[in-house]
Image 1 (tube, rainbow, N blue to C red):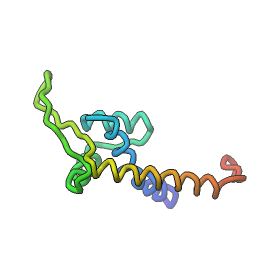
Image 2: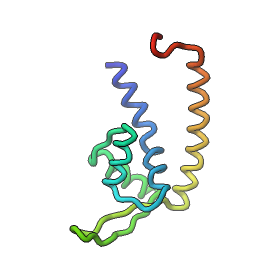
Image 3: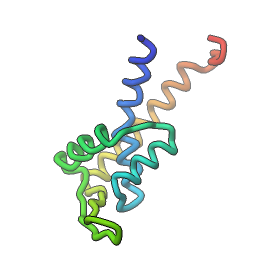
Image 4: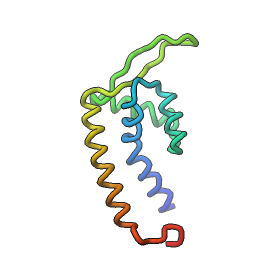
Length: 114
């Protein structure tokens, strides 16, 4: 139970960063974000993604455009705002620092046989 809780918290902690990183590549539809996260083995369901996208938008980090679809209703495509790009730059620095800290902390330890 403790391990599962820690794993969940670790994933939640990086989810926004991963989403902002994916959106930074260009205009993207929500289901494509989910597919990108699945490819990265970071499984997220729509019920988790949509509230997060709404919060990021309400915080001024994302904007969206409605684009007509040939196979149904218009789709909402997300992009980063200038503020979102700045936050992502700051998170890039934080991520680099965290990777260094974790790698330094576990250096010399046999992870396969702790």
